Image (cartoon, rainbow, N blue to C red; front, top):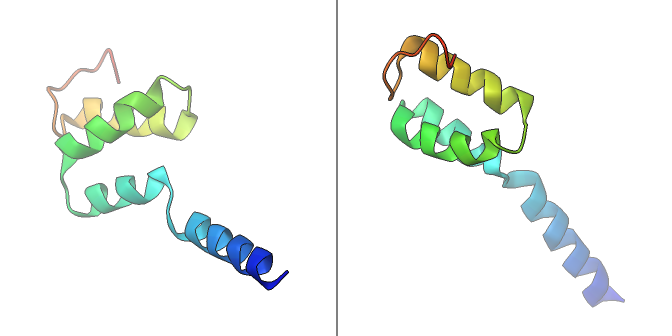
Length: 72
């Protein structure tokens, strides 16, 4: 019983503090826009609205990519 509870605790703890969005936040804060783009692009194809918005801003401002008002 204790092992099961402990295992669940570890899984929940890891899920709380790590997600694909954790990497996005770190790259955004470090202003590594090319890396942020490489993280966002695969997620964009899954239809995540927040990711699509962020990619639009990247294209609009030309952060790490050429400015592209049409794609933005």
